[in-house]
Image (cartoon, rainbow, N blue to C red; front, side, top):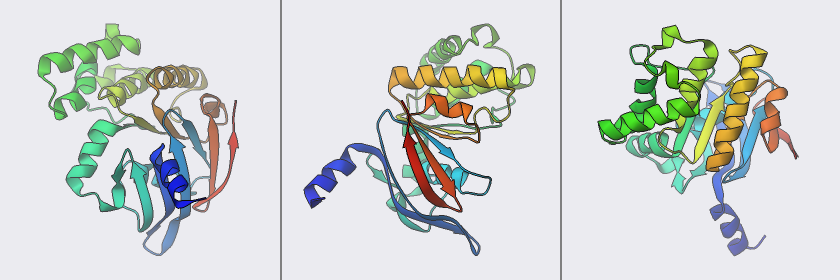
Length: 235
C-alpha cells in the first residue's frame, strides 16, 4: 500500500491500534495487537479468560497504559496523551458499560445518568432534562427517582447504558454487559445496545464470552494469549 493510501485509510478509522503490547510484571497480556475499526462498526472481542480482552478494552478507553505500540482514537494518539487529555477522552468520546454496572449508590437513576453531563460542564437544568429523556429511552422513566439498590440487575444495566450514552460518545466500550444477567434479561440489554448504537451510529467494542451476544455485532475478533487470532465478518 502506498504511503498516501495508508494515511487515508488510517484517517478513515475511528480506532486504529498498531502493534500493541502490554505486560503485568513479567507476564505478557497483549502481544502485538493491531486492528482498525471504522465509525459505526460493532465489534465483539472473544476468547478464554486471561486472553487479554478486558486489558485491550481498557487500553482503548485510555484506562490502562500500554507498554509499546500505538492507539489512535478520534484523532487522539493515546501514547502521547497526558492525564487531562485522557480524562476528556473518557468523558466525551468514549462511553463504557461494565458487567457489574458501577452505578453510584447514593445517586438516583436520573442523577447517575446526569453525572457525566455535569462533569462536562452542562448546566444542571439541561443535564436533568436529558437524564429524564434517556431514562425514558431505556424504559426507566417510572424508576427515575429510584436508587441502585432498589433496581433489578437489568434495570441497573439499562441505567448504566443511559449514563454511558449521556455525553453522546462516538465509541461505546462494553465489558461483558450481559455477563451478570439471566439469559432473558441479557437479550433485552443486547436489543437495547443494538438499537441505540445503530440509531446514533456509535462504534461498539464489546467483550463477551457469549456467542449469543455476537448477533448484534458486524465482526468477531478472537484473542488467545494476548494475540489476535482471526476475525469473521457477520451479516
